[in-house]
Image 1: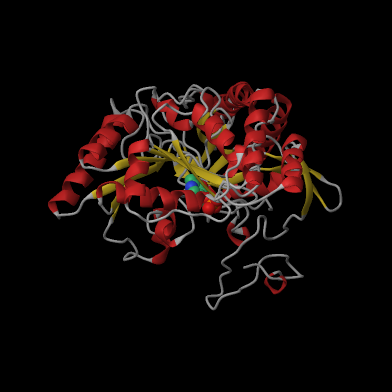
Image 2: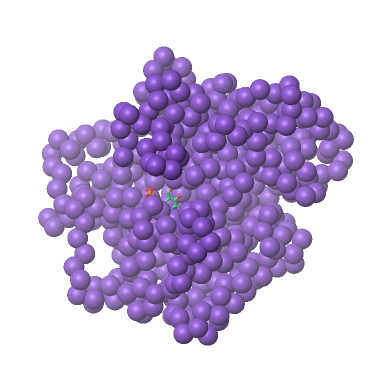
Length: 504
Ligand SMILES: Cc1ncc(COP(=O)(O)O)c(C=O)c1O
């Protein structure tokens, strides 16, 4: 997919590899891309030895190039790598360790190699379960790059024109209480958003169609850092189950302790919620390509009953499982879940102070080390400050900090750093953001400081994912995987701030 002739020697940006004049593969900071040659912990180093603080790479979950993980991989590679047609202890041990982190009924694992593979298999399981075909997905959702998932990713298929939605796909409103249909002032946004799903089911059934699955990220990432109000998933699951469908929780971005208090982000909804299928990816192998689908015995048995053999050449190989086990060990030994909770709370606190001070900050939302800063041009109208967000991330890069802007309007600064991110890192990056916001506000004549805090009702929500009084939205992208079209630095030509004095 990448070839040397796609890289311009002048600009370093990816070249027009297709007839449309738009490249399909893109690099970060296209105007001045980074060449990263090594990384450690929460730092990445370029070819000149310059060190960058990585605030966005959730794939390097336990820290870049963690020695314990690389040792586990090397040791197993030296001994054996093969496929799952042979018995191997690593696979059994990994399945046991992984399912021990999940509610009891989620007891059957399928090992695959990417988030897309996991979600594609989840769809097959769901469709096989009752023979239904239709899928309900959320506005702005992204679930992967293969055909079956582009079909259910409005984030992608919307770019293909108005007739691009397939008839078996139904799009429910994103449960976003900052920008969505029902906001923080609604008495029960969880029920209101769930009702929307119920309406879709009823409509679908009237047309003689049948729901196979509802799929959602436990916290919507590319879609704009949306943390669904508590109780939403329970109600949706009730309606979907009644229609003969299953609930698929996509934890590809947000799983493995990132939310701090829980190991899985769907657990923010409460103990009474258990999805039927959970899909995992990115952080699971700390950069090694592996992923997993976990489901119930009942769903797995129906899948097996189809008579179709399931085989995956690389899924569940002994090296991947050794790596998966090492990642779980490090999370535990280094108390990274606890770190996510502590550092995440501190980061949120610091950012709340920024919100009081800066009119450009419309909303701060987050849980653990999954935090979003929604930049707005107008506090009342919540007009997305897209150019300002892009300006800011370019300026931060000059200061050797890698942050990203995402969400449907690309105005949300998103934090999802390696889980070894420290209090000092949080303080450092927020101090830099403070200076840059002040500069931008002065340049554009926006009011700062007390003028602002008097007018703005601070709505940070606790580091718990609790729904009231507001949501925590997020957005996702990552340095090593460019899933989201609005990733940091993809729009270098457009990121001008409406000011003569600011240059990007
Ligand atoms: C929520 C979500 N699900 C699935 C995927 C697909 O994962 P992969 O790129 O590993 O195929 C992504 C990728 O960004 C994602 O963000």
